[in-house]
Image (cartoon, rainbow, N blue to C red):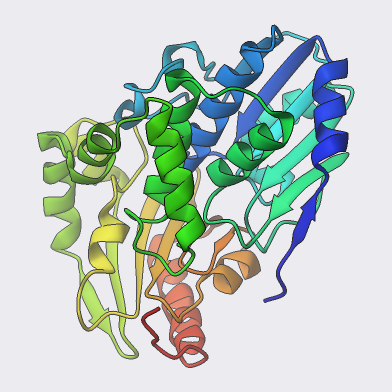
Length: 331
């Protein structure tokens, strides 16, 4: 896949300084990088005296409520006009959900900040670098260009984004510079110990109950594809309203025989959400992109219409084909 590196730092900074009101949105079913980059941006731009609103469909997952400013994020938008909208960690407009739709219709300009090679380059100003390990890294580099002083309120979300999207500094996107960024953020007050404990190691019993049901469906398919299924009945049985696998797909990729992992989540209205992970040297992003989703080589996803078992059969076949084009290399 061709890398993208279009980082219009000065143009983006000018747009921010010219704006009085700013909306920041991120993708549906947000992960740590989505929430971390959103909150890092929100807290940083507020320090410039800007009126900033952050929004993501359905709000911030409970896992990230510890981050500074998380309680200010809106779960939907029904009113408001903004001089500028910033979309973070989303490769296309559809991924920003209903808040993105509303924001684009009520904002004068859009900055596209992302790190996915599948980004379709929507918006007015681009801060898109697919060589970055996370959208949070792009936020940090932008703030460095703007010479914006880092505080703990800015550093904690940004480091959370980096930690989660690198799976604790274990993906092939991690470089020596990534560790330098982590050092910079820790020097500004971010606690790597707290972030790691909360987002990588912490699980509540509700999550374990969900995993228990999902693991009963786990299969290891030909080609090194491991899969699990979560139905609407499973979500109802454990009493959760979050339509998430709670990190199960990342757990499954740790299985020695697996080259790629996938979790299928049955959603209302005959839709299925698909979360995929790959070991270094393999690429799930093209499968996700072909299904109308997005992501990067080792972590991607999509939501499609269809019956659960039919979607599962289709995606397993696509992943089996994709794994043939990868060669496992540990870097």
